[in-house]
Length: 262
Image (tube, rainbow, N blue to C red; front, side, top):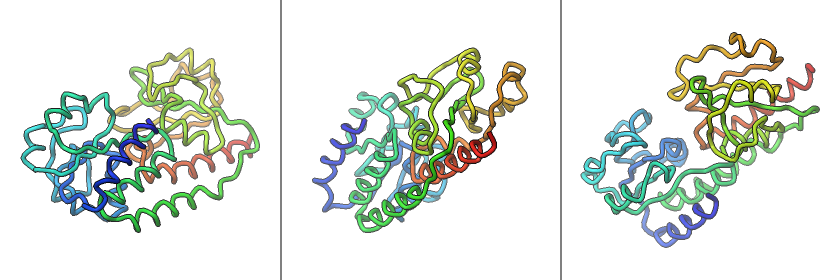
């Protein structure tokens, strides 16, 4: 992924003298960075449920973008996400210059900030944003104990964040470690795996991927766990953007509190 972003950065550098003026966002997580750069007025198309761009037209979802609507907007840049959903077929049908936004860690988020800053003609703002994000996690305190973490993506089916996810990088930087060692972003797991891992901290998200889950501390299958349970907002926590740095600081506080009480 880092290599892919590097290639994208090289491609975009050749266009840096021409700031993008009509942009469609197909990667919802990138919307936060666009706001921080102050480039909302350049966005002409967005995916469903991406807020904060009142003048933009909805172009479907990131899973099923509406090609005809996108073409009608005549964008000069697409900000697309995971290649699993933004397939070669869709890319060929649109035939529009594309920036791949799909960071798996904090370093790749910072790279995207720089890239998009150049693309929108906001390099100075991007530079200040990068500095502020680095400052936000500069004062982390190393937990006094080892803290194991399980992250529930969804209850039914039971899905976990893997070690190739932004969640895993947040947990690691905050001083914890994942109880699972699956080199994927998200994967299906079982209750037995969770229980065997004996997580110290059990994080579960609330959002489109995990609507109205039963609080894990109330589930019979987890009665034997002695975990600290933490509920988070999916839109704030699982999207890789500037909020990720705030979340690292939040987790660092949770982990230090856990160690202080155990």
